[in-house]
Length: 140
Length: 94
Image (cartoon, rainbow over all chains, first blue to last red; front, top):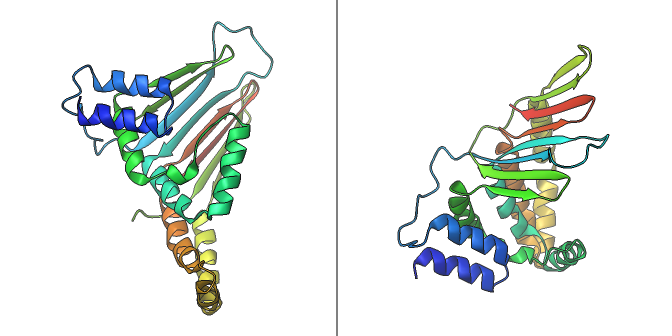
């Protein structure tokens, strides 16, 4: 088992990622996974999130397309900013996330985890289809 | 550290017709005002940090400003584009 595979499984065990995300990440690093496919290249500057209506879904009046380009540096800065969240506020944030169905501890957010995720995401595109919209997340 | 964004480009356009509204907001003025406020309040911030030290909040008080500056400086390149049926909104930090 390679280091990358072990890290992904550790993240899964710690509850940082879901089984589905772990599966996608494992698929992205390949069956061997001995060598990292690529480090985060210097030109990978942005995280792109594109939401567009599903062409197969029934047409609705409020058709919306959203295209957001977030600088990776801004995400890094945001992660560092979360270190200032007081412990009691973190609990409230966690509870609010849980109410939304996201079982995640914001105190687990660390810049090094983000680097790993971004490195994996460079070779990975996430497509989510919920019947109404398609969400496409990728690094560019 | 990156240069903070100087302008916020806001574009609102209508899908039908040729209604297009482009606004370049000079956000660097806001950064200058914030910097001036920070310098003016520096003695107060230092006093609060000293008081907060006894409650274990000094780290938060001291780190807030550099981390906030870091956040602002990295806004450069952020783009949000929302297309609705009849209109489009585009926000971009330049």
